Length: 143
Image (cartoon, rainbow, N blue to C red; front, side, top):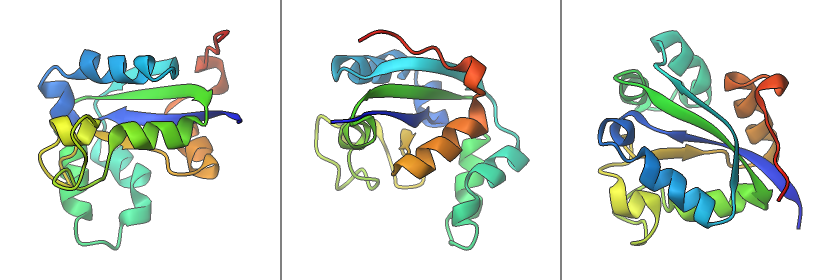
């Protein structure tokens, strides 16, 4: 197994509902370490840039509006197979298809207003982490 880093975002709806601690606890209980964290209120330009890959999709305007309505928590998680483990913890993007016990299954309301984002591959993770954090912001910890 490889130690990986992944970006996770606790989205505006979860922040507004004070679910930050509950979500972070799930990461830590899974053995993922938080090596960087930042609360930020995205501007429309930042949200558009981050989600540029979805620019041509019909849900893009709604996603940008959601991601800018209140602050988010951006996190860098580190651990063995962190990307897959985080995606398993998050559950299916569509909360109606997410298993109970997953973050989206327990807390999300809809596909576009789901509670968390997570990188889907090592290359994506590197790009997404760099969007929010410099190398100096990362604080690796001994396992």
